[in-house]
Amino acid sequence: MGDTSGLGEPTLEEQIAAYQREFQDLDPQVEKIVNALSRLNRRMNVAYGRQTAELGITNADWEVLKALVLSGAPYRMGPSDLAKRLGLTPAAMTHRIDRMVAEGLVTRDRDETNRVRVIVELTPAGREKWQEAMRMATVFEGDLLQDLDPDERATLGEVLTRLLRRVEDAQPDAGGRLTDLD
Amino acid sequence: MGDTSGLGEPTLEEQIAAYQREFQDLDPQVEKIVNALSRLNRRMNVAYGRQTAELGITNADWEVLKALVLSGAPYRMGPSDLAKRLGLTPAAMTHRIDRMVAEGLVTRDRDETNRVRVIVELTPAGREKWQEAMRMATVFEGDLLQDLDPDERATLGEVLTRLLRRVEDAQPDAGGRLTDLD
DNA sequence: TGTGTAGTCTTTAGCATCGAACTTTAGCTT
DNA sequence: AAGCTAAAGTTCGATGCTAAAGACTACACA
Image 1 (cartoon, rainbow over the protein chains, first blue to last red):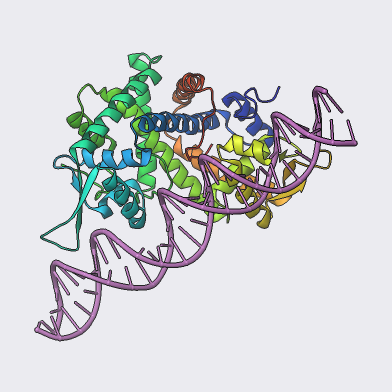
Image 2 (image 1 turned 90 degrees about the vertical axis):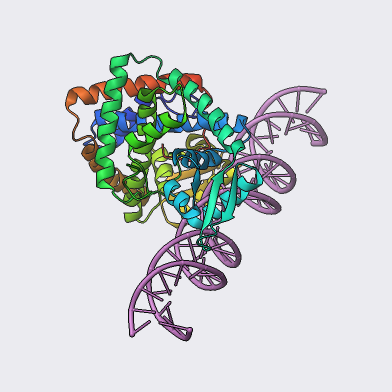
């Protein structure tokens, strides 16, 4: 007994069993769901990280590209808005934009009508990178959900949305800070 | 139209709609599931972060406590094993242990039978912190899943486990690096 | 017993992030 | 107008992480 994968990570079932051994009043059902969610997310981020690396960008870059694209044409946002959207401090945003400008993914210009503002705008190259990343991501995601039949997908989507609504209502403040992709 | 929450974050539905607007060949069903997973995870981490902060520790500390407790009595692990388990480099582990020793959560000693090894052991205070964190976490988790009836919980757990198995099989290398709790 | 080799941590240098202080601009208020 | 206040970004100092290099111990083999 013990963990199978050389300490790298116990099986989900082994982990739940260990929790029960060390903590009374534990609902294994609940713990299974919560731990599966965490582990799934981590694996997804690993997968995305490999894909973005293959494109010569980082997950951090990709997050910014996503925010800009999703804002719609003409794909412009201010650093503060981006920072709020991504859950970063403005300071971190400044440096991230520095890097992305150097990589040619976005441009940074002062707003002429309000000179205290800065406009970050997606370049065609940045948009192209986003699309390539999306193509890779959708392939991965389709593969991930391959074993689920249409009914299961619908149910899963509905249930997760319900959970999300509950937690977002309870945390109205976008409260970010903590890593993670969008 | 547009986003409701002052740029902090669009609704999941709005976000999916934006994806469809900007990217052809998108399966909204799939995207909904994947994005809900990411967002749920982020909110969970925010919640955990608030709880651990309330206990005077960090999520990083909590991860280490979890690994030690789950390893079972006598709650000892080497820094390298911990690092593998948490997806950190040994270097990061060294510093994290420094801090936790200073906080009295763990002890660090050389293994007398193999003087190149180090043994990190949970202190009673560390174990106590872990239990308090668990109590808070289980309350939050129970509340999160409150709206799901037993059938839905069972189904959700089963489906997520299936997804996890699929992605863990595809990424046998624990491949960590990317942030996130366990 | 001497030496090579592998394994375990620690140290160093570089990078991204945060919190807080600072600079600049816009818009009010009087 | 002159000055106040608020908002938007940038800069600064500290922290935690990674990758790579270094130090030390154990073990194998000659």
